[in-house]
Amino acid sequence: MVKQQRNLLWLGLVALLGGGMIGAYVFATPTEQVIKINSKKFVFIPNQITLKKGTPVILQFTSEDVMMGFYVPELGLRTDVIPGQVRELRVVPEKIGNFAFVCDVFCGSGHEDMNGMLSVVE
Amino acid sequence: MTNRRDFLKLAGLGGVVFASGLSRFAIGADGKHASGAMAEDFYFVQLSDTHWGFSGPPNPEAKSTLKKAVAAVNSLATQPDFVIFTGDLTHTTDDPKERRKRLAEFRDIVAELKVKQVRYIPGEHDASLDKGEAYQEFFGNTHYTFDHKGIHFITLDNVSDPAGRIGDEQLAWLEGDLKALAKDAKIVVFTHRPLFDLYPQWDWATRDGAKAMDLLMPYQNVTVFYGHIHQEHHHMTGHIPHHAAKSLIFPLPVAGSQPKRAPLPWDAAQPFKGLGFREVEADVKPNKFDIKELTIKAS
Ligand SMILES: [Cu+2]
Ligand SMILES: [Fe+2]
Image (cartoon, rainbow over all chains, first blue to last red; front, side, top):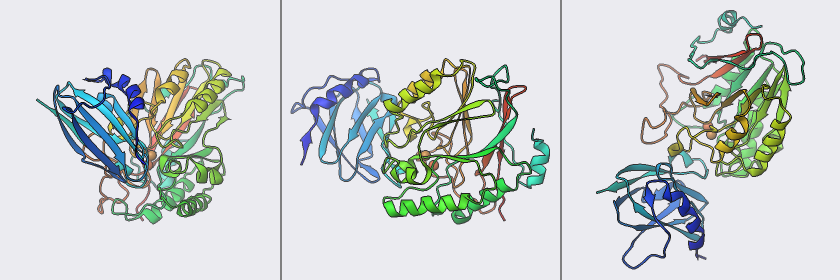
């Protein structure tokens, strides 16, 4: 069963505002790119995400097995990733650079390897 | 009071001592317990991140490392007042039976310690996958306080929640505990994860650690000892020092020094390099703690 969790994400965006990304949650418009990020022990797929500065995107998260957390500390961007649910974060990248992300919910022997890079380019 | 030079000589340890600018610090001015009892000098031993049950190239001696550490503590000429294990006693497993087997084996190995006062707190490897259930069957509460010779010790659990939170309930408990103390009481906090954002990119943080620090801030003599990052590290939050301990399974790299937080490779030429435990001496007369980092022997 896949349940949309858009209302919860709205709350998550408060953290976004101070973090070099700005955004106000709206439903994805047909013009906005959706990037699907699937997670399973102990990887995010993909684990390299490249965004264009100033171009809003929807990051859409799913988990195949256990609860994970997607967290980009330098951007204050995070969401729980829960099996059976789709979580979305709308982001407008403002700052160019490479920002490491990590699974911040302990998920087993291999949790320490579960990370990736979000790159914002011109 | 322990004579440290004798202690190092007699123990026959590697003698590798890493002192740091923060290794001495004041813990109070009057040498008195909050209750008014005179404090005495003593020392305790902190061991961390033994990860019993781990196997792999980062430590080909995984089956013997914990036993060697127990032997090294037992060989200390003057025995510590107590020993504390600051989490990741065992390496995690998805299998609840295997988890209990590892916890039982760990318990039996450390039962060989001569010191009978042994305390424990969990790490995420012990407690995050079952919210501390198996851990508590073996070692009881995941957070508690005790008093010893004029110092109030508080242990905080930031691992039974897999998201690495202390949680509001435990924070309220901490607040209540601190309320009873004088502002200049000598307080030592043991926890597993850092209570500050050391490097959240590697999950080296406690999500609501700042709330605990806010509660501790009004107290003048607080020191935090923790584990999790498998290396010695010293940090100040205002006047409060945090001291991370080495691991007894494999060392981890310095924060951000490599893309992955993969263990540093085992060096056959220098077995057990980067592993160790520490002695913490509470000199209550000059009101200082001394920290000495110790190694374990290869043979
Ligand atoms: Cu840990
Ligand atoms: Fe550990």
